Image 1 (spheres, rainbow, N blue to C red):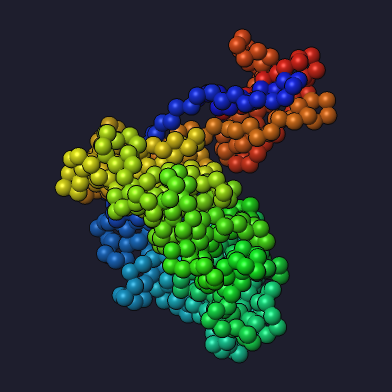
Image 2: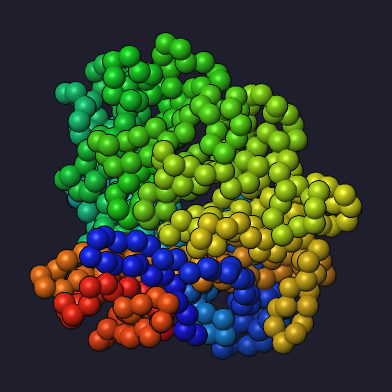
Amino acid sequence: MTSTRLGIALGLIGMAAWVPQFQGQITFTTVVLNGQPAPTGDGDLSFTLITPGAINASGQVAFMSRLRGPDVVPFKDQSLWVGVPGSLALVAREEFPAPGTSTNFGLRSSLLNYFFNSFVFTDSGAVAFWAPLLSGPSDAGIWFGPPGSLDAVALTGDTAPGTTDGVKFAVLGSPAANASGQVAFTAQLAGTGVTSANNQGLWSGVPGSLMLVARSGSRAPDTSDGQVYSTFFIDTSIPSLNGAGQLAFRARLRGPGVDASNDEGIWFGGPGSLRLVAREGSRGFGSSEDPIYQSLSAPVLSDVGQLAFRCTLRGAGVGPANDTAYFVGAPGSLVLAVREGAHAPGTPDGVYFGDLTLLSDAAPSLSASGQIAFRAKLTGAGVDAANDEGIWAGPAGSLSLLARSGSHAPDTPDAVNFASDFNNPVLSPSGQVAFVGFLTGPDVGPENENNSGLWATDPDGNLLLVAREGGLLDVGGGELRSIHSVGGSSFNAASQLAVAVQFADGSQGMVVATVGTVRPRITAVRKAGAGIQIDFTTVAGKHYAVEFTADLLEGGWAALPNTVAGTGSVASVLDSVVAAQPTRFYRVRVL
């Protein structure tokens, strides 16, 4: 399909933007349904109990599912898959060989019922996950790779890189991973010379070449003499790893001068280049008059090196109504993005942010470019139980209210409003937002099976209804199923949203909803020697042509030589023949 997305006009007296009207649209593609045959190649197996999945930049999906079949034992039936609709590949399966070991994936204890814990899906198509082992000297490990090419990153009982002989991994935390093939994880240690003072650490690198980033008992950068790492919150916190291999993590300290008021911090960087970003007991805003960090959440990290985290504050003028905040930005350039007690953008004067502790994972969602999305309670003039919650998104300093309880829910009948109950929003790398909201209004309620839905913004920021409880979804071949519940779990830069669906007949599955079409955006038009350089955004896997005309009314668009393959980054094209035209207009077209 060919369509015009954006044009920039360039004339002798300057530049002006020309943006053609864009109409949002939503299309669905079914990825997997329970009862569907599972392509294992070893019998009559089918998918059942499919968990919410993830989608990467190229539209591949990853998900976990239990299997059903004549030779499958219940609770020994978990599996992990990657692929595209119609072409799914098995990554790992319970009771099947675990690469790098002489045993199988499997549970040794009936007390455990989870598997392939906290998997991470990268834009390269690789999956990183923690899993237990059925037998042998190692009881668990971390694996990373695409289907058919998994590497064992670390196994319990392995020698821990960067430590002395006899020091081994005892407990492994869940991993982070990136498209460059790097992983990061925390671990507990055991062995020679290991005590409670030095038995934890953080590692990163590629499989086979891990590096110790930090270890309990070692000096914590940017702290006073004798102050060392104490713990890395292995059970509750996963380090954040971006595409450049940079890390952000929270750790606890001990040593001289350390007490409960200053014993936690957030660090950023890599092996040998860590720096302290924030610490309990330090000023959150820089001024000696400003509040002090009282507690810090685990951070999230973007590919451009920006962090986001939640904190509580203490100090003069700080109380329960204004003691929680979100900070966003690069190390050394953090800005206060949101604070309880501050005016809530998009609301009338006198309406303020209330409780910011609704997010179960503490930090807001963070996009590749540093935008955030979050939900929060409201307080103030005219606020009651019917309109006291909302969803916001955008860059710090320019947040937009996307939805508020008590306001009309887009694409629903008049008088159908959002109720005071939203799920945490999902944010795409390009800034699109998706969330589940609940509804109130005439003939709306649980008894009518129509009081929840999934909304998402299109590339222009328009909020659209993706799917609603009680609505019909074509799962393929014209087969319509009634929706019981729906939720978005992962959003990519190509406007593709991974959606988990439960149907009224008891079936379930995962579909991909394409929310509008991502149009390229011209970011700059500038002189480059004797020509003009046009810079524009791209999506990986798409191809683009830059076109020009001398007259918008007459049209007559012509393409510059050479098409451009999208990479997900900004691309540049040079127009070297402009001298003969005093005015020239440009647009970028998706091929």
